[in-house]
Picture 1 (cartoon, rainbow, N blue to C red):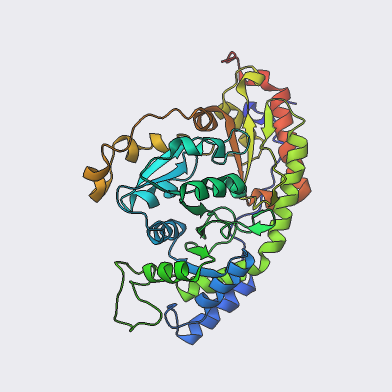
Picture 2 (picture 1 turned 60 degrees about the horizontal axis):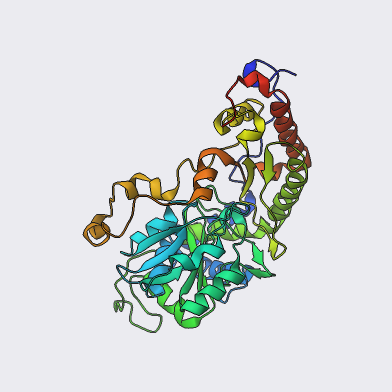
Length: 411
């Protein structure tokens, strides 16, 4: 069968589910807020209720909403006592917000490599990056797969470091039965447009310690304290409050999330079983301690050497032509981003310019970006078994007919 990229018929012509998904529940909640006239969280009930509902869902005691996942991380870093010039260890294979949140506090992101079979921070290499200036570890539960929290928490205890979980992609993910975000000192989630629960923007910080939650809430609310006067400001802070309209949408999104999560998890299991049978493609490995995967992304590891040297981009182009909306993911590691290469650190440029190297030896991260990672987004996983079979069929078709793509030679 001729490849679609060469003029053949595609495996799939039906579109995958669009995102976001919404219904009358969002409309009803939004109308209630509109009619109430209480659109700001300082006066309404939706935000406080959502903070409690989401914290309970993730097994945490306290929730503090913010304007984004990025600002949630910024508040967490500040609340943890990280000072300008301190260091925070973070993986180099993640969205730039993980590192920018560190920089925005005048601290130094120290990039660590990822585990090649999970794409999470390699816990066995963390201690090599710890110095006298290290104050925190920021594991990223990448794609919704929990990082090795057993090892990370043990390292943090040995070195008296804070653990700030970047759980921006991990709603409903669990490690040994406990929700991520409730395992470290704080955990941060995002509700940006692409996320599995979304209000267009927004974020939340979770904690189990009442004092941590109190300080974090103050940092997100102009430095106010719950027992202080409205115009008394105790911390250097801004307005990072989520609106009642966004919280109303998030409550509706959260109410249907368990059903969506189950569909995504079934789709991931189907793909894991069938992708593993194909040459040149390998699913990420499953850790038995991961008792729930949020399935924000499905990631296949592509090996061009096993497919006549065909580059990842050429393989992806062929899959897209077959009707599969896949992505190469991050094309460069964080440390190669222009902001780091040019050391554009804003007001902290003089403080940090000599602290940030431009070159790193992180081979697993480099390989994931350049030649290996192929992503499928969470909305694709909502299509069920028929949709997942079309993905497998398209991969198989491209692999079997790879000679049509031309000769690239093994690398």
